[in-house]
Image (cartoon, rainbow, N blue to C red):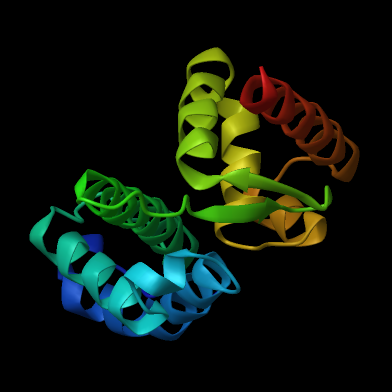
Length: 173
């Protein structure tokens, strides 16, 4: 990934971070709403735009590089999708749940239930939750997660397998 900091982090504007990452943000948004009820609530471009707006309104002082920015964007998109689902469910008609597929499982899960399970996992083991966010939200392969985290292939694989099983158990409980 490209390091957008030419030297001094204070010189990087939030707009520059968003501009560099926007194409990847749209890719992540397409992946999140692809073939799902989420497409009825919000289109991928709208999701990426809403995430960009929210990120621009927040302070992006601590963002280190493009991968960090994309992780923040993916988390923001998940929050936007959950907010949209809640708004739709609050209406007069019961809206369908936003369903997504957990990577490597072929198991469809409710995005809101996954968000709750991921929050519980983060409280239990932030290291495992980070692997899930990189794999699921950013769509990184195991090799890319190894490169992004600096962990060994074996450690990433073990954490991914145990986190995936923990989440599935937590969601189905």
